[in-house]
Image (cartoon, rainbow, N blue to C red; front, side, top):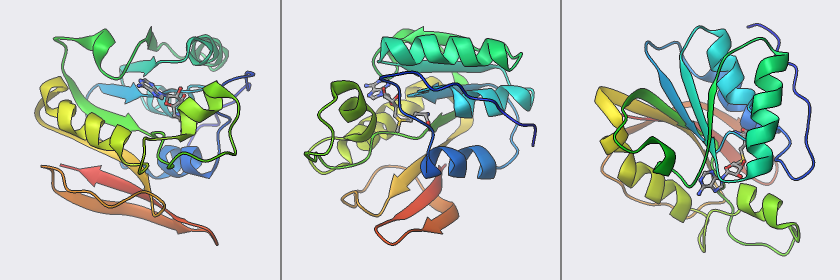
Length: 182
Ligand SMILES: C[S@@+](CC[C@H](N)C(=O)[O-])C[C@H]1O[C@@H](n2cnc3c(N)ncnc32)[C@H](O)[C@@H]1O
């Protein structure tokens, strides 16, 4: 794996265990990719380095600036779009969708609204993920699939996808899973 050099920006989620888990362990695949919630761009840049055509979306304008900066700094081309979930790519289709989503239930830990946007996934932590998975089929080519990080701190949920754990990492306070939905 080529090295990715990331510059952190104030108000943008700093890459952590979840970012590294998906960047390091997402299996090889063919085709173009859409990332929802790109933050600093770390995952999208890894995938662009592998030769994929990548589109990256984030709702936080500072994350858009950070991803544009980091992509340039790592000599890769990424299409970077500001907006909510799939809104910026209406009527477009991708082979793979990736996301390290906000997945925690609300806590008092994050007074900074940009950080709260990055980590809080709704009342049970799962709402953002359910919303993404429910809409995703419209934006995928036939046989398209999704790689996402899920945490043991989220409430369990049912969706209309088969799922498999690609890689699990255990920490004393949570298990992080890289899931494949197909
Ligand atoms: C846990 S961070 C992951 C950032 C980066 N992909 C990484 O792994 O380091 C989640 C990201 O999702 C973005 N986000 C939150 N809600 C969003 C929404 N409705 N649409 C698009 N992006 C959103 C946040 O701004 C944040 O950058």
